[in-house]
Image (cartoon, rainbow, N blue to C red; front, top):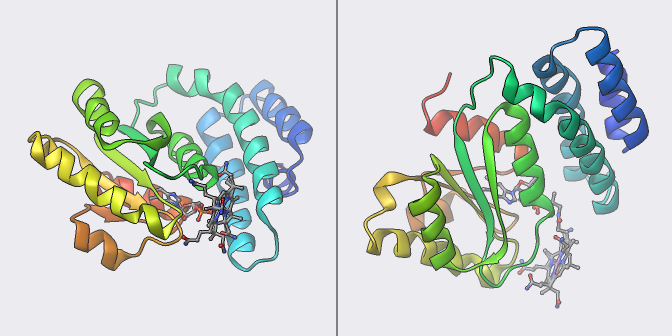
Length: 210
Ligand code: B12
C-alpha cells in the first residue's frame, strides 16, 4: 500500500496521495512510517527521473505539490508524536535569485525527515540571513542559488556572518545547480548537497545525527 502511495506521488496525483495518507492514518500507520516508506521513496524516484531528464519541471512540481498536501495532514501529528525535531534549519534563496523550486523540495524533504524548517524565502539579502541566525538560532543555514551570477551572494552571507561573529553559531549548507563541492569548500561552507535527498543525509551528518 505504501508502494501505491509512492507511485501516486511519482504520478503527481495529489487527490490519491491525500486519500492514501488519510486511509493509512485511519488504519493506524504511524505518520513517520508514511513519510519514510511512502513519501521519501516516491520523491527519490522523482529526483532520479528528473536527473535522467525523463520528466521535466512541471511534473516535479506536481509531485512536490502532492507531497506537500500529505505533509500538511501529517505535520501536526509528526510534531505531536514522540518525534522531537532533529534540528532547526533555516533555508532561503540568496540575493538576486528568485528560483525556489529546488529550495522548496529540499525544505520538504528535510521536514519529512523530521527537521523543523524555517523558510526564509527568495532573493534574501545577507543582512536578513544574519538576522534569522541571530533571532531564530537555527542549527543549519541552507543557502540556495541557481544562477552563476548569484553564487557570489553565498560568499557574502558567510562573510556577513563572520563579520558579526555568528559564523561559529551555525552550520552552513549550500546547494543549487551551479554549486559544487569545490565551490562550497572555497567559500568555507560546512556542507554541500547535490539534491534534496543528499541534503537530508548531509544535514544529519553535520549535526552528528546517526
Ligand atoms: C524554473 C526555472 C525558472 C523559473 C523559476 C520559478 C521558481 N519559482 O523557481 C523562472 C521562469 C522564474 C526563471 C527565471 C529566470 N531564470 Co531560470 N530556470 C528555471 C529552470 C527551467 C528549472 C530550475 C528548477 O527549478 N529546477 C528543478 C529543481 C528541482 O532543481 P534545482 O533547483 O537544481 O534544485 C535541486 C538541487 O540543485 C538541490 N538544491 C537546490 N537548492 C538547494 C539548497 C540547499 C541548501 C541544498 C543542500 C541543495 C539544494 O536540491 C534540489 C532538489 O533536488 C532552469 C533550467 C533547468 N532545467 O535547470 C532555469 C535556469 C536556472 N534559469 C536561468 C536563468 C538565466 C533565468 C533568468 C535570469 C532568465 C531571465 N533572463 O529572466 C531568470 C532569473 C530571475 C532571477 N533573478 O532569479 C538559467 C541559469 C543559468 C546560470 N547558470 O546562470 C537556467 C539554468 C536556464 C538556462 N539553461 O539558461 N527560471
